[in-house]
Amino acid sequence: MSSEDVVVLAGGTGGAKLVRGMADVVEPERLAAVVNTGDDIEIYGAHVSPDPDLVSFWLADLIDARGWGLAGDTFAVMDALRALGVEVWFNLGDRELAWCLERARLIAGGATATAALARLNAAIGVRTRVLPASDERLRTFVRMSSGWQSFQEFMIRERAAPAVEGLEFRGAERARPTQQVLEAIVRASAIIIGPSNPLASIGPMLAMPALRAALERCDAPVVAVSPIVGGEVLKGPTAAFMSYAQLPCDAGGVARFYEGLLDGIVADEAPHDPHLRALQIDTRMDDAGARARVAAQTLSFADSLRS
Amino acid sequence: MSSEDVVVLAGGTGGAKLVRGMADVVEPERLAAVVNTGDDIEIYGAHVSPDPDLVSFWLADLIDARGWGLAGDTFAVMDALRALGVEVWFNLGDRELAWCLERARLIAGGATATAALARLNAAIGVRTRVLPASDERLRTFVRMSSGWQSFQEFMIRERAAPAVEGLEFRGAERARPTQQVLEAIVRASAIIIGPSNPLASIGPMLAMPALRAALERCDAPVVAVSPIVGGEVLKGPTAAFMSYAQLPCDAGGVARFYEGLLDGIVADEAPHDPHLRALQIDTRMDDAGARARVAAQTLSFADSLRS
Image 1 (cartoon, chains in turn yellow, brown):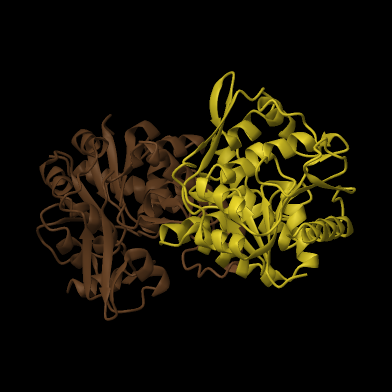
Image 2 (tube, chains in turn red, blue):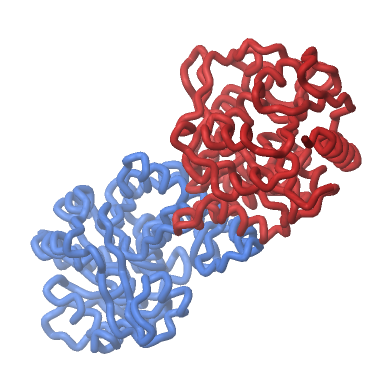
């Protein structure tokens, strides 16, 4: 392996698991996760950044078995809000609330979201760089028959059930990726797009013109790992978004969404695209061994694509 | 007793206890507490209003045995902040944090502090009106040899230990008492200044020109209950502030501080002031019976002063 960086673009759980696997095969100093901030939400006086935090908690081995939040967290504050008659639609554990309150405090004090997360991650021993894709405001909104809602409201209030009729990344045209993100991409020896929802989790990052341009321009091979496993999406509403985009919910559809960016794709099925190099492996990441194996195989594949 | 209101001006614990005693002898609809907001602080994304909350928690019989906060509260969020390396100088329980976060949310949504507290109090069954003296910004600052600090910092960080060299109620000249406060005073049959720190807890309210004028103008007798019991201040740094104001720390000193406002004073000692009517009683309020007794005796005394 080269001495340059490995960059993983990540959104939700699939991307976070791949980053965790990658941390077993790449030294922390060489690994950078570039993470979606379109799902961020200000609530309870806190700045919640679900995707960067998911990656951070996975890296610290602190992710709760429920799939989000901190292991063993308590919910005293949310329970107390409910007792006061507040409709608590966005659930946040006490320790996670502290994490997000401290981020809000640091940002109010002038820190960037990137610097705030770096400081929080230092406190839990995460040495891998977890880079919010942008320090500027970019928010994902979903339209359903009842109207537009933020991504979190669509996911939680609506349980991602309604058909997706529109998708907007508000602020994306103006938002710039951070200097740290652009430098990581320029220095990268491999860029891996994690198995996250292409439209709703990776899409907000690609909607920033400077981030897309940096990926198009970079020397490193760009490889996507398909989030579709055994013909199904393991977690989250990827199918609804692929359907909205009129893309088949398979590796070929994922490849088409990333058209113009990819040098290769990793999936458990062969996409019907003769122009795209593909690696067909078991992409399930149910345990640490599988996560490290998928990470290593993806990295070797990316290395093999280097021009 | 008349059908008009009883108004109690309150700051810290002494005032809150008297309000609680008064709630046993006056119907909730007839009782209004007017409470100091000079100690308010925005922290952890929350709006903390220590004195109005103290009165509210006392009225709901939810005050913790430690003397502040909610009975049986947990401290998961503060513990988590400490684990993240945050210097937690202002301790707030999880349920109290929820209370203060919800207040901040209501205020950010356009509610006044008065309306926000009324809504919170409705949720815990408090029917007595707890009225922040003002909905506008007024903050108490204390100067010590090391410089100016907010009242909370002086009390908690400095443990109220340094000599008081200055006292400012920033914003008081511009801040207006609320309409609810002014109406309660106009309608009152008795106005009781609770046994709170005259300078630091009652002073910020009297520093609002319109509130002082309303008290000077009102028809009801104004009676102060001295916070000095058995020659000592039971709680808080009243002595340090009386000393700063060059007032003796006794009922006479309290009466002098309230000069021009009082029709009478209640204390366990006779003040050396031939022009002021005084009621000498045991003013300790260690249990519910004593609190109700002091309240009833104070009220009878006030009634006897009505012109």
